[in-house]
Length: 128
Image (cartoon, rainbow, N blue to C red; front, side, top):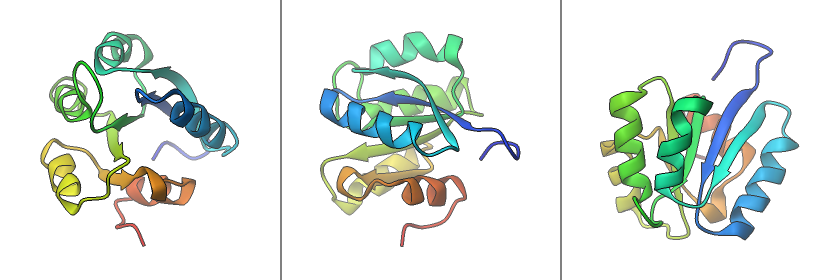
């Protein structure tokens, strides 16, 4: 994750304001994650990444301009030290394969997203 005692700096990219609000509250209450930005589409994320340089990108797989898969692909090509986790309201196993093909650490269905699931993904563990 990050050095001992440091919090993981997170950028959230999702087109659903309610989901962003829920995730923001969860991350800020965690103690080991720090939200450094939240945006509603891939274009905004790509504009902010160079100045924010987050440790972790949590992106919706399917959102406008470009989608999460394309954002992760770009980040892995240009900022390989930024880790990425893709999320979606859908739970199809094919999404996990697609996420990993683009370089994401994990795909987590939104219904199963939790601090423990994020921590497991950052440690390279499969979700239980």
